[in-house]
Amino acid sequence: MAERSLYETAVEQFNKAVKIMDLEPDLADVLRRPKRCLIVEFPVVMDDGHIEVFTGFRVQHNIARGPAKGGIRYHPDTNLDEVKALAFWMTWKTAVMNLPYGGGKGGIKVDPKKLSKRELERLSRRYFSEIQIIIGPHNDIPAPDVNTNADIMAWYMDTYSMNVGYTALGVVTGKPVDLGGSRGREEATGRGVKVCAGLAMRTLGIDTSKATVAVQGFGNVGRFSALLIAKELGSKIVAVSDSKGGIYDPEGIDVEAIIEHKKTQGTVVTYPKGQKITNEELLELDVDVLVPAALENAIHAGNVDNIRAKAIVEGANGPTTPEADEVLFKKGILVVPDILANAGGVTVSYFEWVQDLQAFFWKVDQIRAALEEMMTKAYEDVMKIKEKYNIDMRTAAYILAIDRVAYATRKRGIYP
Ligand code: NAD
Image (cartoon, rainbow, N blue to C red; front, side):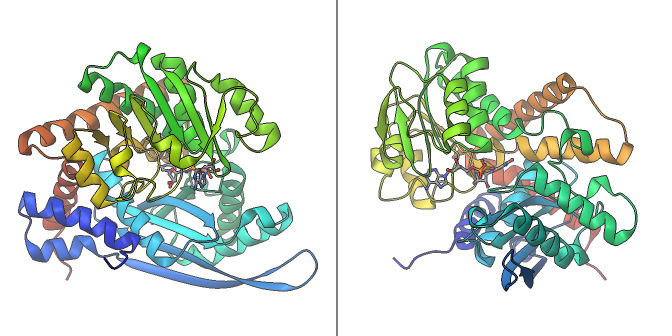
């Protein structure tokens, strides 16, 4: 079979839902296409004085329900197709959560690990200036994604503010807490994954305090997912991994200790307890819950037959291919899809934006409680649709989301 691009994969998931919900074909065509795709080629002066030209992207997939919202990724393999897919998923993610947003995403094709801090800053500021023509607190509000963090968000916010001549805190989310950021934002995606893992176990009748969990990827999402699942659900984290490989310990891994280890050593694989495993082996472990929290296409036709987890909670965006989805559904493995499972980040980003616009900041307990309530509501809404049509949770989440965006589009009408 010819290789499918990530955007084509995303559209295939959408088409499956459209068929079941019987959406008007014309409207489906409007909703599946990105509204705007911006490509920017921009120069950066490197520390040794030479100039390098980088390629960046910002895609606004849909803004029918509100401003575009979505992260910015720095990765050597990032390309327009990937950013289009990620922006597409953001549209459905914000709609599943019923946030007043559309979907967007951005990226720069770069390996940030090869840049000095000053080079990273110049790259970030120039990129943000280049995409500023479509960015703003009421137009499009970026956030962190793979290899971007609160420091970079502070540079973005400052760059935008310098260009417009006033401080605009609400132009990006995921900022440092003392600079218009929100308490609870850093852990938010992991907290949402934890809520979904707990609910998935409840759905399957698994006792969370006796459950075993494997987490692939140990960045923002993987780290906080592992920590909160262990601390708040009492489950045993038996395996974690990063891009260099993983660690397996059937007795359970001390998540706080391995987070410290990764901080000082840069990887989990040199952690002294447990045995080394590959990322492939981690995915195939006999665990109750598997959390893929690294990159796309981790679970595919080639390894899906070996997946033994009872539930998969997608921390990453797009970790399961459509072929793998079919097999998982037939095997009765419950997949909590990315557009629901990892929506905790964008939900607290929404809280951050609201706090910035109101210049009034909330306590962390309020944020956590509001997030957990919204995640639980979204999970239950999706479950109802899943049961109504007897379909997988991903398709059910799409149906819920598409219905909301379709409603907004019909009500607004097609301009002019
Ligand atoms: P991050 O850069 O903080 O961490 C990524 C982690 O994945 C690192 O530990 C890295 O070593 C690991 N990794 C990279 N390639 C790997 C591979 N081939 N095998 C195993 N591990 C690998 O990124 P993040 O913010 O944690 O994002 C992870 C995923 O979650 C992405 O798909 C992202 O789009 C998605 N996501 C992030 C957020 C957020 O708030 N940060 C929200 C929703 C979804």
